[in-house]
Image (cartoon, rainbow, N blue to C red; front, top):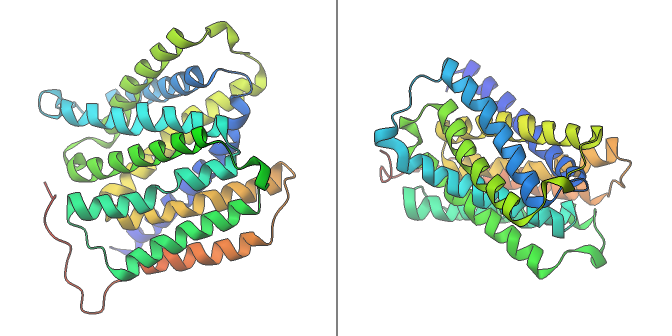
Length: 303
């Protein structure tokens, strides 16, 4: 990787972490003015509509005859299941607790990438993933009380969300090279947005949405910044690197979420943030550490 490519990757990671780190609190605010499924569906549909316009202009022509199964898989795992279950997780749990459960994802990606893509799963990588997740737990433990850790239902939603996100990440790594990046966001999020919005209209009432300035700001930010731009960055990084190594960096997201809450929402900043940050940084270092006499990742799964 050239120096310019490395700098671009660092900038992309920083922006991704900031976008996703701020999204938890923004979604939590939006859910105070909208039923959960309709909120997930309409913000996803907004992302899909905007990205479809961009794809028509800059994304070329998608090969739907060849790639429609891949787009449907991405819509199912990255949008309908992940976005829908994530919304219910945040609804039933405090944002810090929700982040702990949802950010099982890098660990699941490491395991699934080993099983499905043939990526190496060294002792250092396993230790790094465990340390990174421990850092998320430590940070979140300092931001929520024992009485508000969430319900078993919320935990179940969170685990399902993490698993679906991990599956979507691995499937994109396996098949995404043949897709236009813009269409890889536009089509799955359009399909998923239609499914989630239709489900929301069947289960909830559109009149329950309070269209005030706070809701609109939350809806626009979560749809355009926290979803459209963030997923463009995420899929680009996954395509460029080993799935398990890239996924490890999202451990930074809960740290940033807690820090932003302290800076802009006057939430308490626990000293545990420093310990959690140290664990996360150490974990990411171990996941990305190159073996001294290492062999190359297996070619299995490279299509």
